[in-house]
Image (cartoon, rainbow, N blue to C red):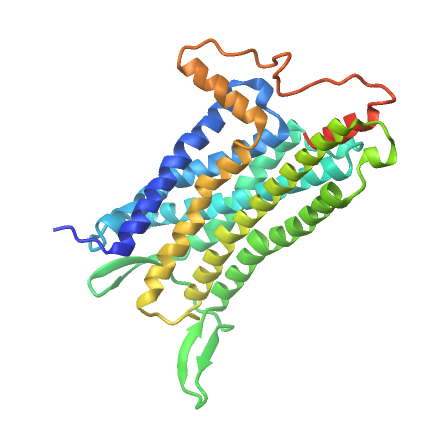
Length: 360
């Protein structure tokens, strides 16, 4: 008879909600960018890479986690085959690193577009995005592969577990009590790996994005607008720019907060547990499940925030759904409701064009 704990039921339902949001949302973003060439802008291609990573996690990793909640006492393939165990572990690790690097590049691109709009040679292009994607995934899988190479199938109390076992090193740290009695051993190789992983995958990108987004926020919210220096904008245009500035800063801060809150706590917890610095108690397993669920919830949040807050992508998804429903869609560049407008360049509106170009 199948008996589930109340906590496992709630986490199981949360995973179901994540899958329901993630797979359709990411699929729509990917299909719209692949089908419609006018959507293949540098930022949209980076958002497409986020959707690829999120879709891989939601289809190749989360379903196998659900089996452990439905049948917690059963032994599955990931606990019997070392190759399948490594495959299940490398998918989320590589995808999370790829998402981290992609968000970092998006941040740099927005910084250049807003802070240096006239320096076109600095801006991200489609060719530069294509050149970035290959090294991005190579680096992501390389960092994740270091961890999975030391995974082994270990049996405890007639149950198989997929755990990491690092080789013994003369630099290993022996932990003793106040009387000098041996308590535990911390692998030096394990410690170095986690320090580099947290530093390269989270700390450096997080600190850099925090600094750049702070500068962008100051420029958009507090800095003197072009109309304050040159009286070329009407009151209506100034109010429109103010609303757009507030929307941009809200999206940037929300994206940054979600990235930090859904990833950093979980991997710090896993690092401390892997280094045996956390006491094993009855609440340890529940904390691990909750943090893991929060970490994977970013799979559903990323496409919603980055994709559906982008007007060009939402217009492309609308056109795609109309095509799927056999309804004749609107032209991609409608005269009145199009995603891009070409303003008249004149001495009066030149400053406005530069400012709006930076916010595209």
